[in-house]
Image (cartoon, rainbow, N blue to C red; front, side):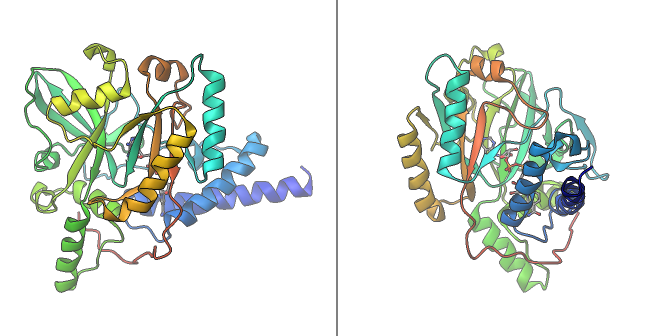
Length: 329
Ligand code: NAD
C-alpha cells in the first residue's frame, strides 16, 4: 500500500473508533459528549475516505450500521421490516444534486411529500384487532427495545383504534420544548444534572424500566409511516399520513406535496426562520418520494432508503453539550 493510502487507512480506523465511541454515548446512554455538527463532520470525512477506498470499509464502520446496541435491561423486539436511518445533505446545492439523481431514476417528475424532521427518536407501534400490543424503539434497526408499557403512558398514542385493524405504524417520539424546559428546571432545583437537549431527554425518558417515570415526562408523538401500506390500499405518503390521522394518531400538519425545487427551497426557508416558534424541536426537513410504489422500486441501501433524504439545518451557534448527565434507568 502506498504511503498516502496507508495514512488514509489509519485515519479511517481512527474515525471509526472515535465515531463508534460517540455513537455509544448518544444512542445507548443518551449522553453525547460532542455536538451533532461535530459528529456529522467526522462522519462525512469517513464517508469521503470510504467512497474513494471501498476496500477500507469494515462491517463495524458507522457507515454500515443503524443506531447502536440495545439496552440489556429492556426486552428485545425483532423488526420484521428494518427500521433504517436516513441519508442527509447539509446544503441546498447537495439537495438539488439529490433531486437530479431522483429525476434520473424515476420515469415521471418526482413529487415529494416534504415533512419536518422531528428531533426525537423513532418509535414503532403494533396493533392487533385494533388494540395496541407493542411499542418498540429502532435499536440497531433489526432489533429494537420493548417499550410497550412506557408507550401506554403517552397520552397522544391511541390504545384502541376505531377499526379492528392489524397494523404497524412508525413515527417519532419527542419531548415538547415546554416539557423539556420544565423537566430541566425541576432537575436543576433537585440538584440533578440536566439533559443536553430534548432529543436526549426523550430517549432517556422512553427507555425507562419504570413506566411511571415515562408517564411523568409528557412525551408526545408524530407518526409518519404505515408499514405494508398496500394492505390498506394506500398509494402515496400523504394518503398514509391522512389515514393515520383518521385512525386517531398524532400526525404533523406541516407536510406539503411539492415537486419544484424552488417550492422546496421556500419551505426550507420558512421553517429555518420559524423553527424557534414551534412547540417541538426540528433539526431539518425530509423529502420523501410521495408515490409508495416508486419508493418500493427504489428500495434501500444497507443503512438508508434511497427515496428519502434529510436536509439538516446549519448548527445553531449556541449548541453546547452538558457533560455528566445522570443516566436514570
Ligand atoms: P437521523 O436522526 O439523522 O435521521 C433519521 C431519523 O429521523 C429517523 O430514524 C427518524 O427517527 C427521524 N425522523 C424525524 N422526522 C422524520 C420524518 N418526518 N420522517 C422520517 N423520519 C423522521 O439519523 P439517525 O441515524 O437517527 O442519527 C444520525 C444523526 O444522529 C447524526 O447525523 C447526528 O446528527 C446524530 N448523532 C449524534 C451523535 C453525537 O455524539 N452528538 C452521535 C451519533 C449520532
